[in-house]
Image (cartoon, rainbow, N blue to C red; front, side):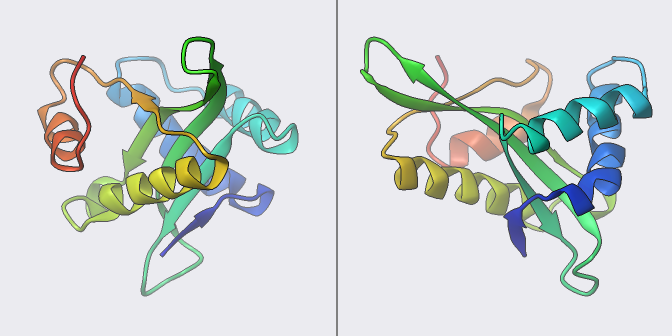
Length: 138
């Protein structure tokens, strides 16, 4: 199950975000990451979708952090899928795909035809998922 994150998800979301940051070779810092995510949620500066465990719906096992911005050339809103992460125990179960589908639904909801994302050159698993879902490498 996926849904929009709320402030009650903050601790679990921060745990996953911290793992995500470490994956990209940045230092772990729970307090700093917690404050960052709290500000995004409270100030409505990002859309964060969380994936929850089907057997334990209160357990957050993945997230997608999306920013809405604008394109001058397209004269429209665009989405930036900035961060996507699934807990190691839940990978290869379709959670990443579900989170991307939520992002695509959000784009349609706001009338955007563009979703931009980036991932590490070495993250072949994510690149394959994005490609399989119709994203084109630039």
